[in-house]
Image (tube, rainbow, N blue to C red; front, side):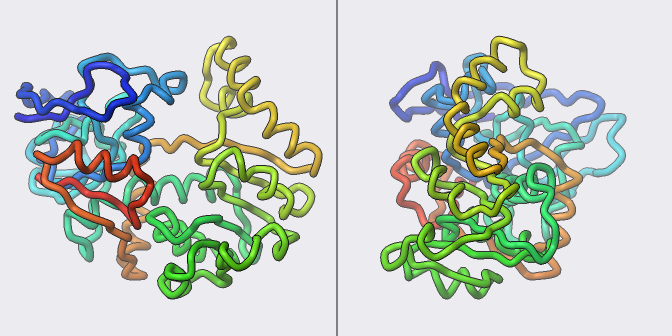
Length: 332
């Protein structure tokens, strides 16, 4: 089979299409024939070595974090799935490899994909949807009838996060450019701020939760709109000591991440707020809940463009520019 592989960390985006053996499955794994894979900023961060402190990989590394496909074989201990099932998954962090014709994956990371979506659409869901679900459910522990702000919520993340947040009973505010307003409101946002006309930090206050999608430069402003004891979870800024403890990292990493996140933690403490950092985990059970929501509410992910597997490097370069409106997909 063919796989798009990285041979060393590099600022240059260049994967090689190599012939490799079809993976052999363990007793609790399924073998998936990949139909489509999502291309993400996370892939760029892995290529350039930015997350090696969180997850350091051995080379050659088959890249790719999320996919949709059909199960071709099941291990002897697999109970939830059978050959022919149409599935999707965010692959476990230490076993990525979606940019390949076949992948072996633990059944606990897999879910049946929504019947309302095509393979291309389904491949756009797992990473963003699980990020939103884990931010809201596992980190923020959100309560209904409270206010959530998602800055820059008009892209692929917002397309998943807004309906999931609404299903949890939240009042959702987001910001972005004017062209994203109608779509964002149509999927459930309660309030939209055009960032070119208004500064969210000037118009919002008393917010319960913020999901930061913009990074370290925005944290101070985002914290300023939270009410006392409000919570912020960042997908972009920096891991902190709390993150290292929750993931069971060794002491030296706890100290290192404590240093990296100290500015955020200090800013948060000033306002009696909590700062969290999230790195999304594989979770088939949560993904199955998301499947049910996608079907019930007929949610459609936002897709920017689709590339053939042969053009994987062009797809990655498109994502690296930051100009994609929604998910970039690679098809097989």
